[in-house]
Amino acid sequence: MNTASILVYTSGFCPYCHWAKKLLDKKGVAFNEIRIDRVAGARDEMIEKSGGRLTVPQIFIGAHHVGGFDDMAALDRAGKLDPLLNEVLGE
Image (tube, rainbow, N blue to C red; front, side):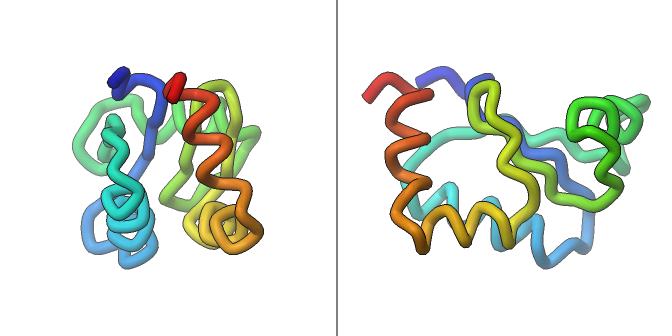
């Protein structure tokens, strides 16, 4: 599985980041986590990639910018998260 297909920008002590990672773990998918509070330049990179969003987490599945945890949870409730994961991961 290509972990580069799923990218999650996070920071320490962020409950939404924890919940986002927990949901992805529950789905059984691997992801690449970038801590904006530990990686130099990561915050600026996240802001640019997300179209100016300043909050974490920011979640990318393939080329699709999901948004934050609430956005990903809404996709899951609507039954749209699994098909997106399957499409990006080639399953």
